[in-house]
Image (cartoon, rainbow, N blue to C red; front, side):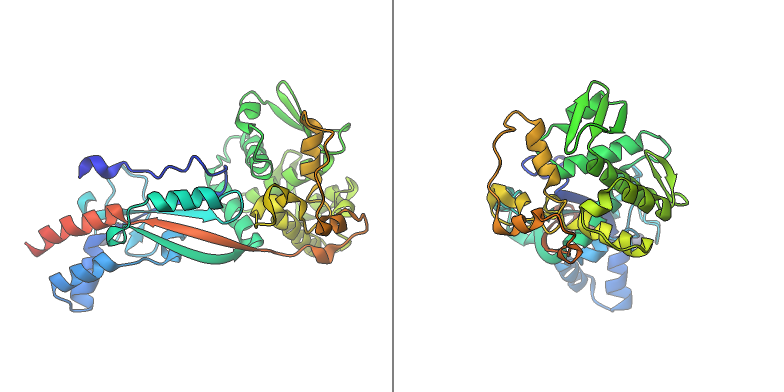
Length: 356
Ligand SMILES: [Zn+2]
């Protein structure tokens, strides 16, 4: 039994940033307590009920775990509610896979490999949208950054680029990176020069926006490569650089601009990867700026000359007239996999001692 504890799912076939992992602990002493004392069940019936327990996704992925769930990084955790020791605690791992062309095949393969008996794994589908997915991504990003170290600005930029451009080996590029700069030369895309990464103005603007968004709860205003910025200052900067015009945001009021900026960033297909026709997926964009990066990438890669075919929808996106109404949230399907294996084992072993 012990040997089987280290059983991580193999997720290497999923592009970076498409799977979010959550781990939470649950106290079986607390659960048994609820079922026997509060609900008055006999231990045997409680055992049967608990084995069937299918936690809600909200319980498993909540920032703040609620009894009988709790989070702990401790090697020898104790239940914060009743003080029970490790053997009473079961671990539940939850994987959230964003549906879409880039993950569908890998997901099907993975699901086929999972054992089916006793509901060792629960598969739950949830409808979401690009905006919610974006904020979830931001939240996860924020949790993984070390804000005490200034390097987080560069790390956040890397995560953003990895999310937008999956085919580039950003790990390698960023491994020796010392600075991220706004390019005065490039119109699109990026350029890597030793320790420096130059981003075209729009991409740079987006990086600032991400930095602002991810740090605004940690600081008054938000921290960016350009220092601490209030929302007003950020919007002014983006307007001056022409970014707002280029993505068709005509609003003046900073709050409204901000909302549009978020919708634009979130609905870019690179983010949500809603299936929209094979390798052409990024072409079907809802905002005039969303195919920019993709084209830019072509221009910096070897096969620069070949222009991908445009879908009819994206031709619309090419029109330079602002079309802010086009920026909408898009549906995204989320596939949750809940690993109940440790839970089932612990329920059995604790029941044995509980009933004894
Ligand atoms: Zn407990």
